[in-house]
Length: 356
Image: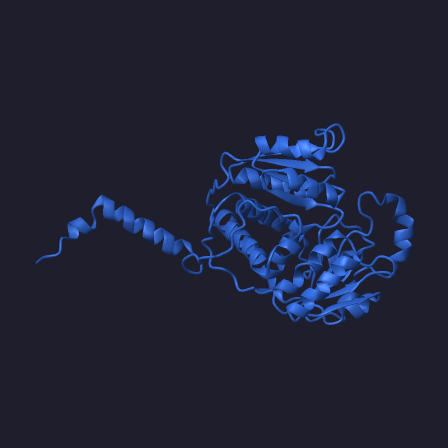
């Protein structure tokens, strides 16, 4: 019996073969990997509520979207027809721009609401605001002063709520930091992070997540500026559970010794302007310089969430090859896109899951 080659190349079969080839060739590391992680419909207020696999999934989606959209030029309207309320009590460059452009790039409609545009907790209580926004939008991102306001918003909202920054945590910043380090080092497991500066919200988010990747954490803060005691207690429990090291000191060089990554942040956050002179005096000697890098591990890198002041890190380090700050800033976009896609859809990454 002769094989009918003409039937093999019928339009129907050609289309099927083409789709199969596109799928196979489109995956840089093979076909997509299944996952048991389900984040759709959840809030992201703190990384403490997200397991190691949850956070790894968000980084996986981030890498996937960056590969498909930025490097392959694909158009992925994964959030077409959806809208996002963006509440900003505090001004921002990276959070606002990454969220607005990222949500729009995915086909959605972002709605920016400044303190002058919304009655959050002033002329309208937070419960009523949450209920109103839930009828008009598919998700809420809020950048607020009080974390308790964020929790109240999430309690009464019927749609996912994302922490764009609060006085307690900054989880979306940390996702960008981890994606940057994953891209640079190829893996996060075994890295030693060194935080030099204020025991603030950014540090809290690192403390509540680093050990879940098998990363050690060294912390140097001036006396009186230590991280929150409850966060420290939780971080200590994580370090035991995940067999990592958590080390706290007041000596920046002691903390930097053997570290792979040096990290700092502003010493004077919004709302702390009246404390400026006292803080500058307390943080004297905490500036990250090449002298700090001399005691770090070979191949050390530097992160800063921006905006940056020279007293926190000098120009030599900030603009050096060791500095990953602009890659880190760009990754704010890919990680917040991953968060929104994961909380609002059933998207499965096509890129093979990275080794974390």
